Every structure is written in structure tokens, then in C-alpha cells.
Length: 206
Image (cartoon, rainbow, N blue to C red; front, side, top):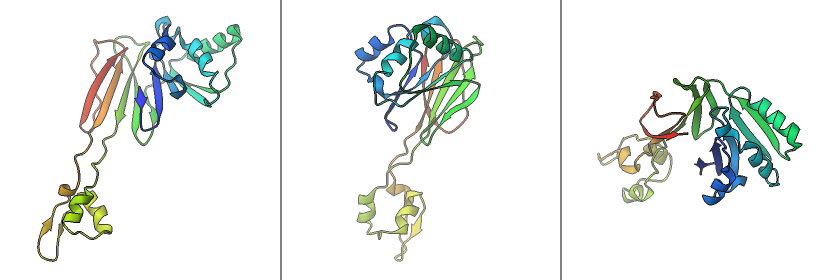
């Protein structure tokens, strides 16, 4: 998942041949900052140690965060021990529990236990809606003076001008960008919802 606002790429699971797939998709592994594991199965983690070793070759990478179920930290410890591999960056391992696991100004990432497979986590990313841009050309056309009025119009406030003409704030704001709710589900048999504002919903089965 590419997060343009942060210039980051988040990887959900890391199967065998993952690096080949990323290269084929022209994804720069140097932009990977977080790796999220949904379940401790060989299908999901067989390419993890290889990818972490490749990331160690990039001197620009300072930190990698890995999120996953309990036992992931033990797997990585043994993998590093027996392969005698050292990483040049800081590797932070986060043991997942249900609820909010990552939060920023742009989005929130939640983890819930899958209702069918209790050993598997489903993840939900909610990207908040953003207000539309202020239409400066329209404000200039109405000869509205530059200043505090612009800030009020951006909030959608209405005003009555000295000549009695009513100015409606919504006329000066472009359409809101709806937030997006993205669900990463372990299987297609599950249905889940998260209450909130209006969202466009995308489902990815992994």
C-alpha cells in the first residue's frame, strides 16, 4: 500500500518471491517503512527474512516497523541467530492486539481478530475526509477583502454584505474529498463494519 502523503509504502505479509513481485511492480523497497503480518503462516512470512536482509543493504533506511501476532518476534530472533544476519537499521517489532495500532494526522489503522480464524488478524485503515480547497477566484469575483473573512468562508460560514447581499460559504469551497475505509481481510467469508462518517470502502483479501 502506497501512502503518497507520507512518501511511504506499507507491505502486508511477505511471501516467498515477494522481492521479485515488488521489482516487477516497480516498487522501491527503500520506501518500505512498515511490514504488517496478518497470520504466522509460512505463506505470509517465508520471504520476510530475505526482504529484511535486502533492506539492510540500503544505507538510507534508518528504521523498519513490523506488526504481527505473538510469536513473530521469536521467529525473527531465531532467523537472525541461525542465519547470522545483522540489520543496519533499527528493527521495531510490535505484537498486535485488537484496536488502534497506528495513528497519524492522515489515517488510522485498526486490527481485529478474524471471526473465522482466531489466529488471524484483519486490518482496517481509515483515511480521514479532507475539506475542499478554497475557491480564491470566486472570492475575488465577489470582491471579498483578503483577511479573516476567508477563514470563515473556508469553514462554510454565511455573511450578509453591507449592500444586503448574502454570501454563502459553500459557494467558495470545492467538494469534500471523502475518506476511504480499506479492509484487509484474511478470508472472503467475513463481514465487518466500522461506524463513522461517510466512507468509500475497498476490500482486499490476503
